[in-house]
Image 1 (cartoon, rainbow, N blue to C red):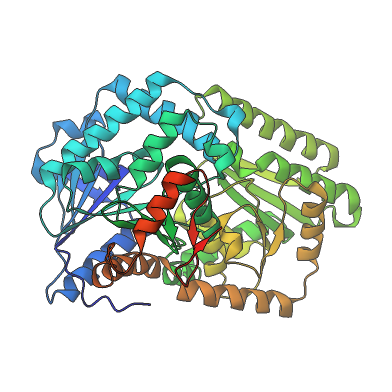
Image 2: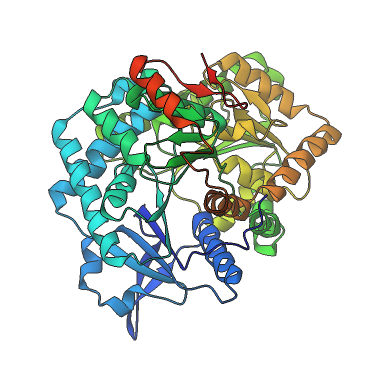
Length: 516
């Protein structure tokens, strides 16, 4: 890891769709209530690091995000606390609907998670997406100063990096993509002008980050196929600069989950749950309501386990929590109905007066409840059919200071590339899920301990602060080791080769030769 002592950035500007704040009414009036999520913690650490590198305390972080109408009534002083200044982006309600509900959630989300049949291709929504990104740009350009580092987040703002580059050519811009970046075969489903605009938009950044090396490679291929740009190692070569693209796996605050798992109130609720379930073996899962989470397939895998293992009846309970999300949309209502029908059918088939095979709840959990279930369960069953990373599995591992419990993890979650000591399964293979449950239930404690020790050590070394530190290091590396496009990178032969055979994927080997 690079030493970041040469960092010269003055302020950190974060841009994401959501502001990490809520408004709390007090006797003195409205004030900003800061969320305590991992991204907020990482950003605070990053700003502190930048301040220390300049020999001063961290300056306030400016966070630009969509603001609902309630924020319009507040004066600017209510949008600031000791560490953050919030900059709400307001937009016309119809534009917001087309941008967020339409293009972002009804096209990009399903398409990039490999559900093309759920994707809605509407020109009006793309127009709204452009208008919304322009509104974010207007807020940013009024705010940005020389020496600022601008870090833009996620799929709602793919056009913004290039918009900002065009408006302020010497800006320092980072971009991080929090969902899977799919293969070119998926990107090719987008209308040609849309895919060109989106990939061009991302390339306005100096450093582009994804969760895994697979997503990096998918992005690189799309850059080659859509824009015909040459690639040298981890750099995409533009006429006037290079863009660094790399994998930065997001993580969690390991110490927070490790210590919280040992707190007295967590232990009390944990014991209460175990008593309620008669000290059966507990399988636990928690997901937001979404078709990418593989909840129905997970239930069918558990049903298959019960069919094949009658000796485990009345000895195991699957505690499944689904967190409400977008349940006013027909697609999600149908998914909720399907989940609840499947739960009812399985409980009806196998349940007895004293035993429910599945304890299902459709609600949010408090942090203490979540920690109690992480530390009470014998198995964490995390089986999305597609997930950019998935932090639930990392939270479970970090919480198990007792070195007990087994993680069953989908190979289609980004986290599977890091947590190789989990039982890795294909979430659509119900037999594999059933076999994994059986394997986990009979796994010796010594093996559970060995697997958890390896995974916990990895998460200790690769926590959310390491993630933000590595991203900042990439900027410092870019500044201190930026190659000259005229001398260090022999770019002209590649540009010439492009014009002759622009539809080939151009990669350059480490010795600088042009790969076929």
